[in-house]
Length: 330
Ligand code: NAD
Ligand code: UDP
Image (cartoon, rainbow, N blue to C red; front, top):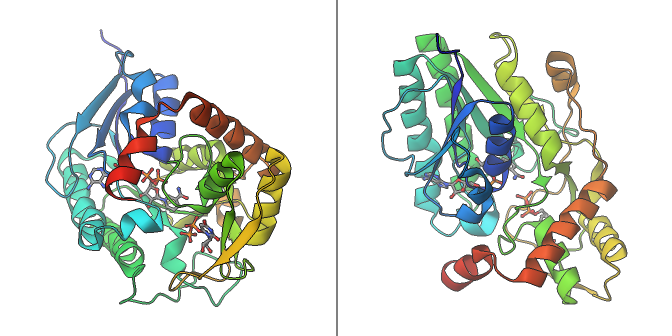
């Protein structure tokens, strides 16, 4: 008799986090189906998995319905960097909202367990610090970040309504800033920006005075948190914060990157983008209790690994990401 092997769908599987998740799940022996429209993702991110018979990639936009059979769904499809989610804000909202409706509809029909990659952005510019899951947030509903923040908030609403109305097995992870290899070199997020600028000897672009804070989680820790959440007891629905509680100002981050790269780059100060949150730090008590999870990789070590990745990418100069987004969209 054929042994049962879990089939897992990862939407956004060719993106930064999605590709690491696919790799982890394939490594654990599961059948993995990656669905992506390659808006910010890249085939380079999953090319090493394509020869594996347990891995399959499919081009599809989650704003359209999808019919297939799987046991679990990780819904990660959505551009995550401000310049990319603001490039086509209507599509961003559709991806979060229609994407959630389509994936929840799929999960309902096939009775699959489904996890939503939500975000610390649901807290907006928080007035409570650090942020706990019971804080409702401080979000501008009509600003330039709203397509992402409100799209993700609406997706959470949908998850909990499907849970209450249809008794589905749902999991909602609120992901805080995560970094690591396979971040898009041109996607404008702070860690990749600073590393690429430092390695190229270009000025490090600090927005505002750089006193705003973020908490940076290394990608391996984050993926471990997502998998533990998916595997947790059914009553553990979340929302649950997954992030690293170490909090740094943006200037502190810039100085660390300069130190670790040995770069001669200087800091330049640019205008702070609209609605840029002033502070962000997760309270991860719930993740510690319910998932026995906490991050293990310190910022210094995670930055070292990420710098090594970008050094190699810049040296080889072959990653399609280096051309595609800067030419068309970035
Ligand atoms: P990413 O941009 O690298 O990956 C997103 C992936 O989704 C890309 O491969 C993209 O092509 C794909 N995608 C976008 N729209 C799609 C659509 N309509 N249909 C199918 N695929 C689509 O971003 P990431 O950092 O890997 O983020 C993954 C998820 O985690 C996102 O949902 C994001 O909101 C969430 N998240 C990430 C962070 C972080 O710091 N990386 C923080 C909070 C939340
Ligand atoms: N930031 C910066 N320089 C950059 C890119 C970003 O100072 O080149 C700042 C940005 O204004 C924000 C923080 O770094 O305060 C994190 O930005 P990112 O886009 O990575 O994530 P988010 O704002 O979504 O947390």
